[in-house]
Length: 264
Length: 168
Image 1 (tube, chains in turn yellow, purple):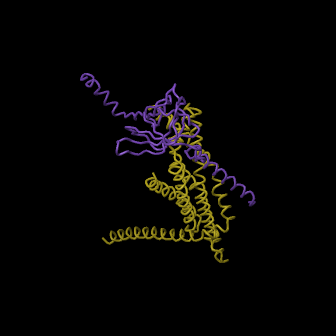
Image 2 (image 1 turned 90 degrees about the vertical axis):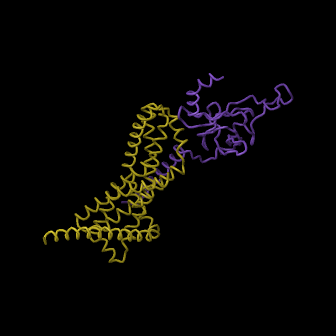
Image 3 (image 1 turned 135 degrees about the horizontal axis):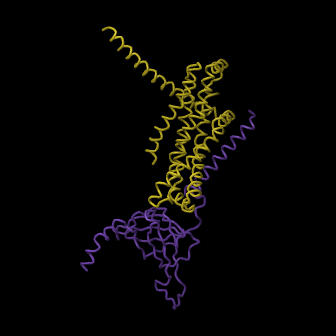
């Protein structure tokens, strides 16, 4: 019977080890977030570093955001038209497209694309810096890598994601107009006027932007933490990159539910 | 990379972002930078305004001339009082205009439709001294109103309508 006991103990050991690991990671993540927040004022002083990061995180994501925004808007318009035309309400197409983009799809899809396009790159960059001991090298030279490397990237993500979300929504509305008005023959005047009548600047556009800021914070925090906490080997960096995309996507979807319940 | 190229790239990025925000705020939502210019307010009392919302359009002959600024309940007359803000450029509306709550489309949003009257309703005689028609001014009240169409009441009238006719 002793082998049964050993097996059981092994399982319990594994469970305990995993739980402790999870809590330790949560604690290290929170500590890193605290350090990042305290490093933000100094990072803003070095605005050139932030500028460079906005370039690599935001500007280089522009193409994928614009293209997917346009296509998401077009598909929304197609699908919405099929449902709305049964009720003779195809004039509400503009409202439907604009509200779903500005409130939900804009920030959420942007954050998901951001996790894949920019978050994974951030993790791999930081992870490789750690694996090649560049971060330790900085510490040797009395340069705090959190202030010099991580904080500018954090601020850049915080700034870039809401801007990208706004671009996504605006391009999506144009894509919806292209399909709805251009191809399906919805009246352009009522498309825009019904949209303007029901989309409110503060309730919809600003709340969408707040979502963008929150998602930018979560996405860059997770990406930076996974990179900073990666096992400094090539397989460690690769699994950290995978975790970044998975965890960011889950966190964004979960947070979106909470934010929507609070806002609307 | 050259810092200048990066700065130009970020500049383009932020400019596109601002343009997107501008499109969203001006073209998609109903935010207007100018406060629609000068306007005047009139009130109208309705028996029932069900479905009319603040900021709903006020239109004459289908043209938007203003919006509903405020809706409240008068506890003395048990009527709903709607305050309509009408743009100053449409100050030639006769004082005996009718206000009705209409629906855009079968299930669309409610709006206030003004039907212009003659302007000779209250004392002013067409042949008399006050031969000028009276116009709506700030603070005047539209008395000739028709209420919101309530679909349930219409259906009820349709179902029980025959019984009423037989009784008359």
